[in-house]
Amino acid sequence: QVLLVGQLTDQCVESAARDAADLGFFVTVVEDACAATGVEEHAKGLAGICGFARIMTTKQVLSEIERGAADEAHSRNKFNMQRHVPSGSNDTEQSPGPDSATEPIHTPDTAMALKPSEFSIKPAELWRGRSRSATIPALLHALKAAGVEFLRYATLDTGNSIRCKSVPLSSFDKNCSSLDNKVSIAEVCFAGLPRYADTVVSSTNLSAARVLVLNPDIDTLRILPYAPRSAIVLCTAHDQLTGRLSPLCTRGLLVRLMDTARQDFGLRFNVGAEIEFTLFREGNDRSSSSGRRPVDSSCFAHSTILNEQEEFISALRKELDDQDIDIEMVHSESAPGQLEVVLKYQEDAMRLADNVILARETIRACAKAHGMRALFLPKIEAFAAGNGMHLHFSFSDAPSGKPNAFSHQSKPSAMSSLAEAFIEGMLRHLPALLAVTMPSKNSFRRVGEGCWTGHDIRWAIEDKEVPLRVCFDLQTRQASNVEYKLFDGSANIYLGIASILAAGMDGISQSLKLRPSVKLSGGDYPQLPQSLEDSLQALENDALLQGVLGNEMSAAYIALRRNEIEHYSSTSLDDEVADAYHNA
Image 1 (tube, rainbow, N blue to C red):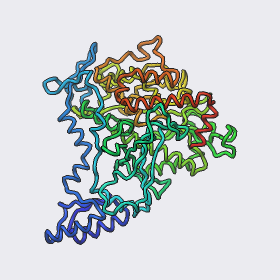
Image 2 (cartoon, rainbow, N blue to C red):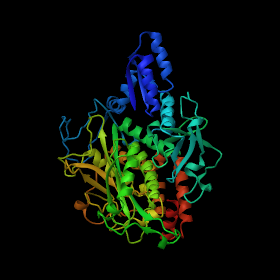
Image 3 (cartoon, rainbow, N blue to C red):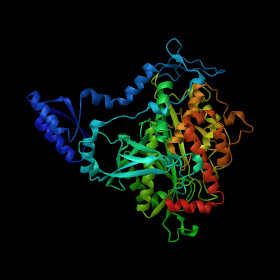
Image 4 (cartoon, rainbow, N blue to C red):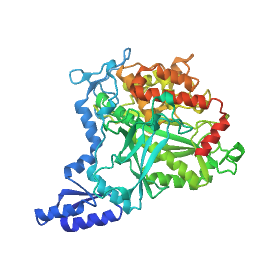
């Protein structure tokens, strides 16, 4: 991007704006930070610039730059709230100083108390999206200058399939003020079509009679390095007639959940993701297991795959970097040909979710370009580790301004009361969460004792054999986040994160007391559901998650998964791998 200020508006500034736009820069001219020899000349210059750049005031530019900080300040001023210490706790918490390790407690005379029964997600109709009309002409010009010919409008259906349509940039009017209302998709595509075919499942109660409009989030726009004539933008789905956010839009669901967390709880969630996948060499016979060979037979953290696939790994890192997706680490995992890519921990849950979608598409494309197939299927070999996608959660506390309100050094658990209540909420809803985070028959093949996934309902500190693992920061040696292990690449990332956060916030709203950890409790633990059907039944009986998903999405989602259970009832593991390989 280029930000232009100076003089003269109708001469040097206008010329610089045109040149920068022609070079492919996204240009912003700060109108009240520019000057000309007269008012008329200044206005003439701005009129000449508007086709190549967006025109903004100093106040608007500063507001955009500081938008994140402004959101937090808004939360502090308007939504301070009482945080209850769980009964039986020995906490003696006081308002902390800048370097204090204690957690804040807000008193009733300066904040309102949140009653457990008051937790509910913001309704869909309250969110309309954000207009960026001043941006569009300059944006389209910059894309054309960069050689882009098509803009893909993309969304993610409940079954984790990307649905997109490509629009030629030449079809946009050069003075258009919005990218909204350009693309539509039948409502049934969002939650009425199974993974295996474009066949409407009647039990979802959806049909092709209604249409949803895809409205883009400009912040997600990326030029695709593996398809450089195309750019992609991720969208929310809206009712064609009313413009309201559709209750079937999973990205919109996460938007509403994040708004609820910020406004009603004063929390901003931080999320990280570890994407696991298996690389296969291209075989002559793709239909048989003998024609599908992993690229190596190495084990966890061995150097073999790093050495032999360095060209692929380097190309992948560059393509992700070109899309502003940072990675923290790459290493081999336990199964043959298995890699893990750790995405950078994000202070914005939505950005992390968007990055996961873009990263998976990039991994697939980059692998193909190097003569391989990348499979995210949860279980590929019966006696080898599966592909998961572990998620890490922590949060900042807007009322106190603490960047990480998760840790608490003086407590035995090393966690704040908020973190303890958050984890207990996740544990209580874990059976139902599996229906969303492990949504396939194959998902349950990955989980079991000794698989480092967790197989019962418990938590521990730095224990890889439990479903919820509290992680410590290597530098500060403090509890930094909780890892959720029962998530895999067949799950819709928006739906999964939203459901997990809702479960955790339910724990916070009720000030739940965290059950003892594995090391302290001993004995037997409640078992997790053993199949997708078991978890779907748990979801049907979970009032909180039913309320979060809403009647329409919940009914369609459960019906669709049950249809898939029936369809895949007789398929073998090898059949599942062959299908995943064919679609990779």
